Length: 305
Ligand SMILES: [Zn+2]
Image (cartoon, rainbow, N blue to C red):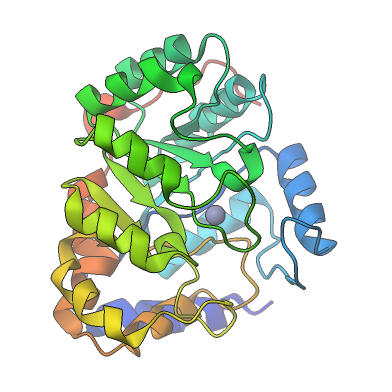
């Protein structure tokens, strides 16, 4: 693949907006064995995917980090997520080491409703973890699972954001949809939650949660692109303007079937204005995660591969 054809249009996009670059809240870097397993699911268009999904960015980790840097993505997450009990600790150890790659990496972790979860979440929070990721469709649990009771109080107090794939896309199950997030926020209204994919397909219900709760934000991941199977209703667009400070650029890099710039073009053609684009693509993410990693948040690798 010609790298310059990826890099040049992305840089042109943020340069035209006079931005210093981009902050991407929704990027995945997973341990190689897990990454292969996830991609196999996408390649087979398995039941959790439901359609053909040709992944564009299959380079090595190093090449993908270099590509993000070259495109001017100044901060990006890594978003591990667990599909069963007992694997979060492994994913978190790997992710913590990966975060030593450079200050662009938003140190990410995950958790699962399981024994000991409050202990390892507490340890990560104390160590300076910057973001958690949960995936309800893959993990098959509810946010208000009693095993997580203690965790939510910790995260609410620490104000560490949790990015949640909660919407019923691409294929819903008993655990997806806004129900468990609604119940959780009633009990913990100050939680910092980022709703992945704008909550698609339940975009209006999740939009309401972002309007109602001070620290609920939406990420744009795959929304508004030609590939995405959900049409965002035009009538909701004015409310996205009102929510300008709470919308974050997300892309799902590298597991996307189109060029990175397509997500940016998809946002631009909404025609919500350059100020909106500047807020979404840079300012909001920089305000939440920092334009560079906070000094205290530098992880110490404890097992390097
Ligand atoms: Zn994702």
